[in-house]
Image (cartoon, rainbow, N blue to C red):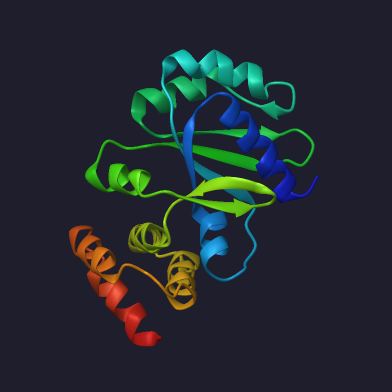
Length: 182
């Protein structure tokens, strides 16, 4: 099974459970920016405790899934993952945070066609911002490169929004460097 097929399989199941989600991370950066390899999927979800057993029932036959990890992720507003038994591909589910930026970017998610399906993605502006935040925290070059790729390829970015949130998130200097490099 190719990655795209696995992603569609996971998202179809999430949709069946009526779980609000949006793609983020490498897949979203690749969608809006430059191609690169990625070995997992990052999905932001809005779930609560009453959905745990439904999640387990939906994924347990084809994926490793831990009820305890899901409950801990809900309690700590963190993440849990599932792992496809056949391919070993990991899907990280990040719970939406209760901060202003996470709520705003979840509201701004956009529907795009990907792999024969309509899928919700983080907006390109928010991918740039989150990738700059991750670069600031980790110094991993792939995050900076992803942000730069989206900035270079996307032609109709909301630059006012981008600058406003870069300032709020204290990544305006990083954004400024990327913009000067274009």
